[in-house]
Length: 404
Image 1 (cartoon, rainbow, N blue to C red):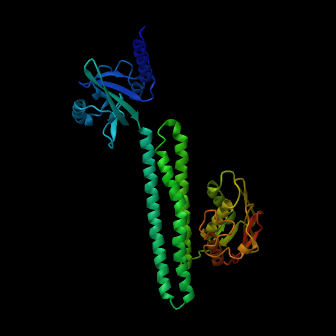
Image 2 (cartoon, rainbow, N blue to C red):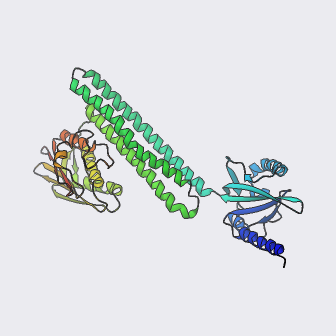
């Protein structure tokens, strides 16, 4: 057999293998718009049997509302055929045998055979990508709405602080404190927002790259990173809003009688999903079940202390919560086995924006313990800290309540 004939036969075999085993749809159409060949993947994608489409018009795979435009485009393409994407930048759809529409990407190529032109269409079902894009858009809209709302609330809080500043202008010390709060807010917010926003942007970009079914686990990882980053942004905004309310004197105490064991157990369940993967929380209560405090403030205190304990502890750390109600004295303890706090830093823990010298690389606003101490004060409570470097930290708050 001549070498050239052998090469042609081998090339033909290669083409047939590519055509039959390709993991995308391939359809060959002649000038009249008749399907002359279609590969098994395309038949399966559109729900047809082996002999149902060959010799049939390509319009069978085009939604009716697009057929008229496609006829014009088909004729124009044959006048000047080139290898190129079809309608780049526009949404394209194909229709299955059962009437279901699929979003698709189509790339066109052409060849001549026996002086007749044929178009070869490479068709890729992008349903999963479109679904991922829709999820990203939804998350983006939710994030945008949340940030916008929180920003409006924060702007309002800052405006109220400015009014308070003007009303108390005779106090130079108060004026300096308000200026410091504004300055530190801009610095801290711009720094703390950068990491989660970068995470959201990079994850959204990467999700778009995973278009196959096998990539679903990777898409889910990046979606979880986006959700986690949104929660971080919400926590930061909540901290600033809480400080704003405290400084404005709008943090009103509402004392009620409630089951402290039940409340703390509920909070424990709510926050456990926000911990590092292998961290655990234990909870123990002693004494009476009922306490008279502001339940909302107490919940904020517990969630802040547990969140701190998680951030400054190892991946396998155990966080211990204890409560007790004995002789009108309510005690709350949150203990971890994390990096600890130096004696020098312990003297400044409740100052606004203070970060420990060994915590500079751990995300946070430096407002959590300030908020905890102020909420404790509003409920006639005192905050204590017991800690040693590399041996963990225990925060204890004692509330002296009135007799019920």
